[in-house]
Every structure is written in structure tokens, then in C-alpha cells.
Length: 143
Image 1 (tube, rainbow, N blue to C red):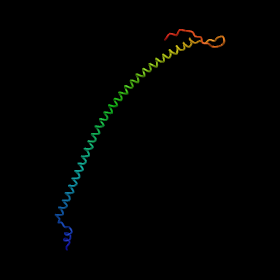
Image 2 (image 1 turned 90 degrees about the vertical axis):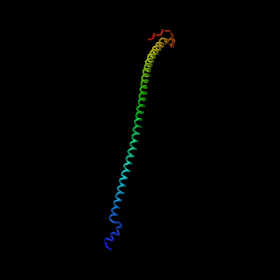
Image 3 (image 1 turned 180 degrees about the vertical axis):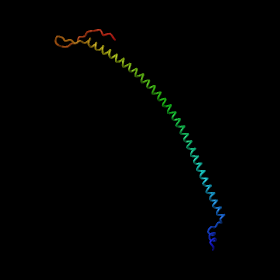
Image 4 (image 1 turned 45 degrees about the vertical axis):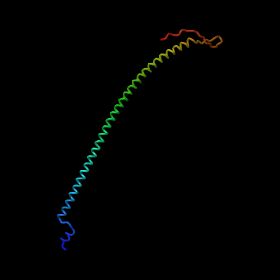
């Protein structure tokens, strides 16, 4: 056997047949790569659309939540303003009552001191015993 016969027996296909097999392999391989790249591109597009929808949903939710929070804080501010006005009014009323009580207490103290000094007079009798002598003295005029 010659060298060409052994080589042709080891490679069962002719050159044209081998070229066809290599070309078919290349076409199938390139087709598979193109298909995979297209599939990955579609997956990426689906993922981007999903994240875009999610982002739009959360942005709308945050905007609504911020509006609700702003409205609630406005109501809290109004309530605090009304409480502040009520406290201020009550403070003014209490201060006026305190002034009136102070004036009243001063009048009562004056009247009490006058009553004590004018009604009770301690006099010593002849035996050295103290007795209370009561006499009527007109009360001072109110101021």
C-alpha cells in the first residue's frame, strides 16, 4: 500500500465532502452564536422593561406618599397653631386671674389685719391676767 492509499483510508471523506462538513459546522456554529446573541438581547430588553415598570411604579408611589405626608404635616401644623393660640389665651386668662387673686388677697390681708387689730385688744386687768376687750370699730373703706 502506498502512502496515498493509507491517507485516503484514514480520512474517509474526499476533500469536497470535508469542505462541505466544515462549512456546515461553521454555518451551524455561527447560526447558534447569532441565535444566542439575539436571545440574550431579548432577555436584556425584557429585564430593562421590567426595571423601568418597577421604577415608574415606585416613583408614583413615592410621589403619592410624599403628597400624603405633606398634607398630614400641614394638618399637624394647623393643629399645633391652634393649640398654641389656645395656650396663649389660657395663659392670658390665668395671668388675669392671678392678678385678681393677688389684689383680692391684698384686700383680705388688709381687712384681716384691721379686724384683728380693731376687734381684739388685750388689756391687762388688775390681777395681771389678760382679757380680751371687744369693741366695734368701723371697717376701712375698700380701695
